[in-house]
Image (cartoon, rainbow, N blue to C red):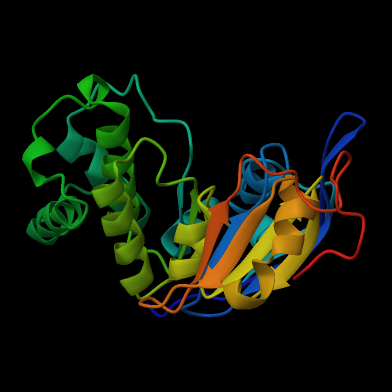
Length: 274
């Protein structure tokens, strides 16, 4: 299966009178890794929930290869899109192997059993995320980081053309953060991923969408998006942004003892630097 294109058109999501997502549009072309970044409460998770069909939009559309995701049969969509959410899934009374095998369900008919090919795919998915040794462990006895890796393995076993992830590096140590994002970078799939760490987003994502108060505040390649001005206006913090001499990616250094230029209390009142 080739990677699927994703389009979000003028998406609005509300909770009562409160707008969580406000007329957001974004695209992820086939094979791209697109990052969602922004402060807490900016709408990242709500936007992703609308994409993977948990939170119905109040307006706008989600298109997967041009088809309205909310109009597709659930089984057909599940053969194309996989989601890794923030909830760790504790309480599943299954082994790790059984949890990962759930990723094969959209590709089976009712009452179909697991095949040797399924077993090999489950094993390889666990190995990819460094969790092969967990296969026979009870899922609900794993640490948060171990559960996260297993849920990513389940998504890989689904063999999706589009994978949507909400903070997949939460609970992971640095090595596993890099390994998981490296896997996503190499997948023959389109990836939409919400991340808190701007430096990880800058290195692994082709393009970024920055959300603030439910709206897109900036979008484009990381080199264009991550600026001193953006740190001040969106995050309200001071920092420096330079191109890393070895990776070539933008690298953000926060300056916690300084006041963000242009914010209240800042000694600087002139134009913000880029």
